[in-house]
Amino acid sequence: MSKKFSITTADYLTWDQNLNLIRKLIDDNEYRMALLISFGSFWGLRISDILCIRWIDVFDKDEFELIEGKTKKRREIKINIQLQKHISSCYESIHPATLEEPIFLSQKKTTFSSQRINVLLKEIKSRYGLKIKNFSSHSLRKTFGREVFEASGTNAELSLVKLSQLFNHSNTAVTRRYLGISQEELMQTYDMLKF
Image (cartoon, rainbow, N blue to C red; front, side, top):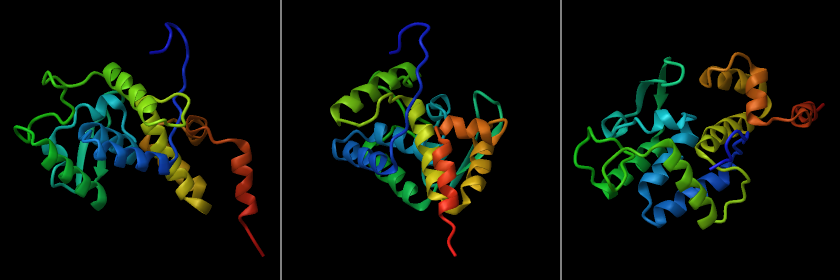
């Protein structure tokens, strides 16, 4: 936990770090945490929205929608084929009592709190030796944004517009700051053009 009245900023995982972490969690039978990290980094959702997801929302589906807790806006989310397989595999391993059950249940059969998730993520950071300074649930949302931005290549500005809409930011400058995109990175865009 951070100190009272201190300001902390979540950092992002590189995409390779993110995928390796998900694989290690699966290898260690940590299916719920593997799903949590997958949902955060593949969809860019806030932890409060992730914790509300039930099996019926995502199991054997290719898309779903939710009303974001913070913004109260409706959001449609596509579940790509690989993530569908991951969800099915975790479902088979977890064996939930019903499809109505929330995915992120503790051993006490209550939904995890955001604070508890952040404690678990700090333990994961230590256990797996993650090279990230500030790792929290918000890191997953930033990991999603950075990967979308970096994967866009020459369409970086378009990806910022899309991310700005997905994140409900007021403009792309906010998104740029949010993702920690430096002026140097933006200037490198010009070096991509060739005669």
